[in-house]
View 1 (cartoon, rainbow, N blue to C red):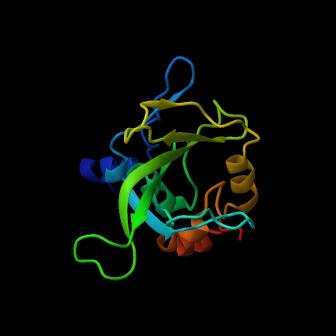
View 2 (cartoon, rainbow, N blue to C red):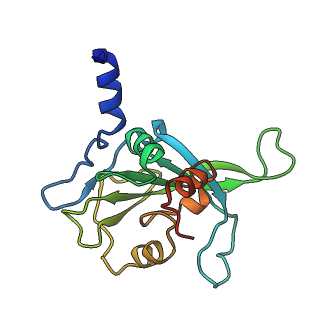
Length: 184
């Protein structure tokens, strides 16, 4: 049976690696400006991974996005393909504004952190790139955190799937369990 070309193209796109993250000559990640157009995975408010008391002040919102091609591949395999890139957008929060009378809402971006899977470039397979807002603007490039950084250590120990916190992405937990890749 001969498949129509459209089916072949569709099938190939499901298994294609996401577009490769872009780096400078000195190995800094060039910040993807379109990350807010990626697949939204989850949000958290005031999350902390350490036993120490959270910082004083209003809690921050964490919004997690992943490139759409990596998301589609994960749905099929339960694994993140080479070149996967996540964005963790950290936004400040407020409780008073406009008509709001209770709860908290998101305000300006404080930082964006990207996690990149590149097994050829990074011995630990994944790397973290923090982009901290300076005077309201995010830098265009960032250096990878050291291989022994807190982020790398925590993710490699506690990540539910391949160094990532799928345990906090409710739409992907069942996918990972069905594919046998969920480890926590």
